[in-house]
Length: 456
Image (tube, rainbow, N blue to C red; front, side):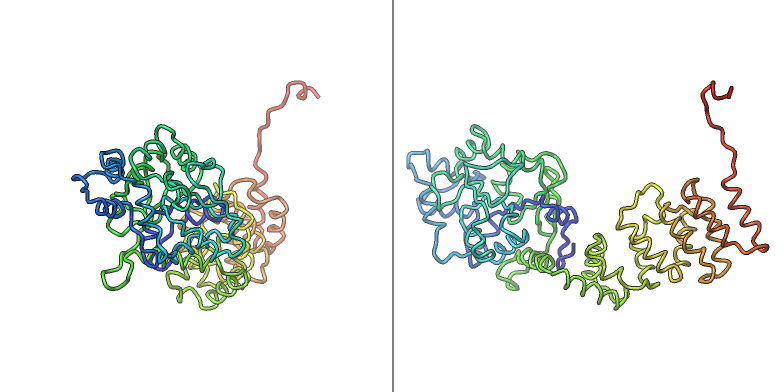
């Protein structure tokens, strides 16, 4: 799905449609204004400044915070973090709301955040109003089963709850992912079942290093990644949803394109059936030559489902659109014998052949020629029904397609349709054609029988 310049993978779109998508929200969601909160590395830096201590070269943030807590200074890391992160001037961002709106209703939300702020709670009240209470909220360490949950998960705790339960130090991470393992158990089951989209994470995040340990090597994980940084995300088969950073001075948030993409995505989801139908019908009337990239993407997605495609297939077939569909691969199942067409695909066959044969005949013939006259049985039957209407076509059309139909596998056409085609032959001029149809069904066959029947 094309959302502005950002391409959202179809696997993500389908997972959301099937209620199988989980969004992981990282620090990048709460960094832009009006949230203005630090990421984990910046938080560690602010704590270091508060206690006048320095991180060692390349020392991981969690280890540094653990050293402060366990060392001679006995710094109360969690209490200090709470004082730095809980600010009255920090509010949720548009992206907090958009990520919630992707799920349409509070009961379908599946968001896991490793942030310590509670901005998703306030965003839920703004998005769902009084129904926000229908969204289940879980706080670490009391997490649900990773393969059977819904709602909002504060996987590393939230500062409005007892702050000493937040996962910040190396000791905390060790308990969450190793000794007690409640976070590890949760993510192992989650990654095994759901499609996951990471938003607001960097490949260098401490959190990602721990999460990576729980990721099975399956291809159901995606992440918003700046263009040019895709190679850094190759670990654990994470696929990239690439976006462009804004240049300094052109936007307050260099990662604003994630918000813009999600805004487009939500706007698409919010379309009513009537609005979707109207837009598709207008695109159809304008013709394929007027398609821009987003209109093309919209048409592709609408034609995938019977309920959303009527604005297209409810119109008379036109040659330019049939040519476009052939080029786009939307009619490939016409010519594939191995495909068992769905009801919707049969509807498309009927639209192009039964309703639009006069418009489509030459285009379909050229494609059939290029594929050695391979036809799906459903397409063969529809063509047989169409060509027997001799008054609608030239004699040459009847004869050439009949030749193709007789080359298909035995049984593709039922006997009644073969009888119709014989009836459609003009005698005596097409006697040889009628005999060819009859001969196709008069081939001798050898059938095995039991020995006693030979004596009857």
